[in-house]
Length: 463
Image (cartoon, rainbow, N blue to C red; front, side, top):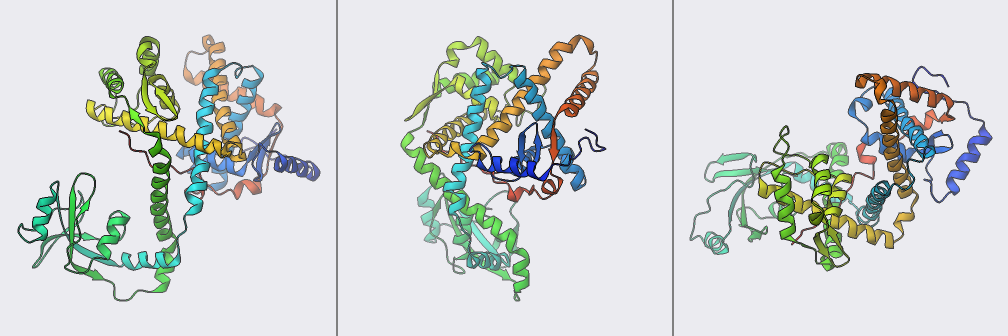
């Protein structure tokens, strides 16, 4: 197969294409979306390609559209043919680690579909909400704010017994010194969370709000003045409507997701065993990486392997208990390898909090995926498709490692192996039966707004 752009487009007989697409639409294991390419009968759908495009390095996607599309497709095809070689070599046989990882990837895909079903599809944003938000965006409130951990102090301020000394709402907010009122915060639309925004924009001028408790502090607010554009034009609303819609949808989805997670997780009575967590945090903090950013880091693979090989008693300890199951330290570290979360090595207590949050996230995902499996979401074509994509990625990596191990003595530098791998892939592509449907490739939606996989539930609180 010849091409000036790495792969070319074979002319496909119309009947053959129709037959393949018909088989694709009838198969319970394939997406119903149209194919952008076929590699040795392995169909690459538009949705799968969009997912791969989203995860591709920026230097692959930053060039001119047609070049970027083809570069990403070439990478995906390379991975598929390497995975096919790995399958033929038996690298997937009896690999329990691969199967366990695929189970976690399947559960991630199920949770995406659960989110779509119970959150995204249930959220609607109406025009009157968009117009209300647009009107707010043309208004700036000047707000005095006071906070205290003690409700009696707040009541004294409300009663006029104690002064209403302004405290900025958060670091970085614009503060203005107004004649007659002193320092105030200048608050515009989308500067604060939606619930607080509703309180402020509905608060009558010069009235003080009811105390608001955020879980640790009580807050009161007073709108002392405002600025507003006098003339508001409809064409300005139409020009900003899409971005306003997106912000309102994200807010509504966050609320809906939080309520959904609470309803699922509250009966689980999730408990983290602090003694075991302390041991794990102590061990990880004791072996912090010497050459890394101490503010945010990932647990090194070497540290995980050390724990797995030398701390077998700790690895078997239950770390989290919940109604439907148990998560051991070993389970936690395996989840971490598949779905790593940032932790801080700068402070031992903060590291433990980061680990606790990660445990809550992994347990949450496990419980939600069980609910999704109960609802048969694991049988959806999109879930199968994503698991297939993940499997091919891991098999391709195994094949590369096998090639390197078999030819290690021939390479005195990494660049030599890189050249060998390029030639190896060129030979495989020449032997493969590859068909690219260029028109469909160029119409795939690869914008972040259009990708349903960019979702997540709210992290569940743990006790």
